[in-house]
Length: 83
Image (cartoon, rainbow, N blue to C red; front, top):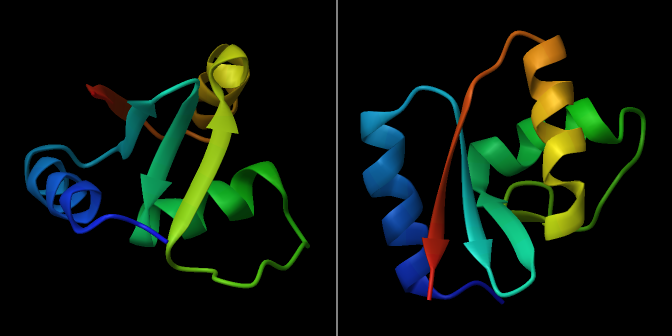
């Protein structure tokens, strides 16, 4: 389950940046709400997940692949580390 702090941080940064907001959490990157759905559709088209609008997570070693896919689709991104 997502922590309220992460959602609040996401909403704060989403007001400032139009692109996909990514948070570095531990050894993963995460995004939430609308950006989670957007990433899901870009990275795993045609698949379903149980909680479509809440969170998308991927390992930190996949960051460059994800950023390339976003660039290929014309989307920008911003990322921030959550301790």
